[in-house]
Length: 229
Image (cartoon, rainbow, N blue to C red; front, top):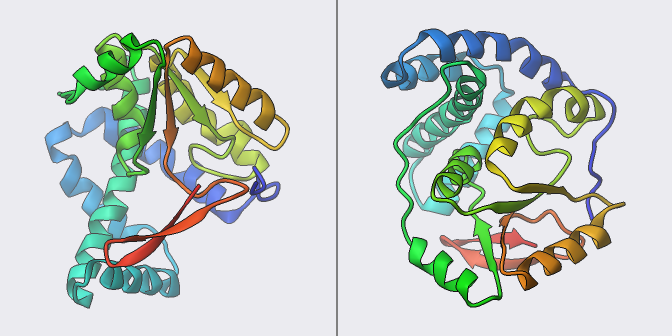
């Protein structure tokens, strides 16, 4: 399994800590229909090494078979979406809350799985905006969700980030969870046993699809390859 943390502190922690107050103001003051325009400007101003941006554009171009200009536009939208996710979390933390229209499709499959007595295991796509929306949708529909998570979930994988930054997000998500199981090198066996018990009891468990595991496999995807646990 990969290390749960990557050191005590990182420069990216400082960037997150400095930008969250600004995003909190945007979340409280700017109407949601105007978020995309504001986020486009903020994403353009967000510091990022040119070599990193170039490498990401090249990966997008190869994976989606698009030219450099199209890959650049996709990357711009992706960067703005990362900031939008933070706006959603910060708006949720405000007294007004965040109340987007969410539609849950395929609920009959969840009902059938749970009624069979074997529970339901949801593999959640590691998409930018999936974290809070998925939990809110299932909670609103009356489906208690037990989610497998990691200490690094949120904003940072450093010890500082895990202690001070990540709870800003996880505390919001936890409102819509029956339980969060935090997976680490020390808790792996206990978490797996708990997940097995939950499924045997007919409960619903969610795991975000990724390659965070001791063992992983590489499979074809979109003309390229992706590594998954």
